[in-house]
Image (tube, rainbow, N blue to C red):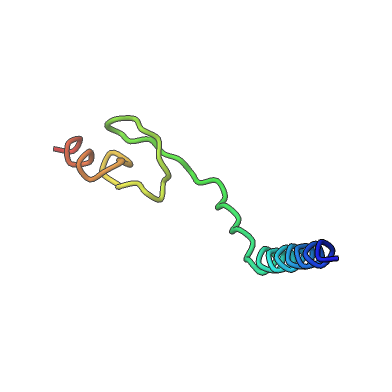
Length: 74
């Protein structure tokens, strides 16, 4: 008889634990959708491709950093 009581307690405990876990999973926000594709440009000095939003504009076009713009335009 003790065996059935212990078994019932274990089954109820597992059921409560699993139901609590499922509530946490359903309450979490869905992951944010990734941003769409970005326009890519290449550095006029080294040729590395990078997003246009990160570009440092110079007289001869986009550069990947201020240092490369200064080196190319001096």
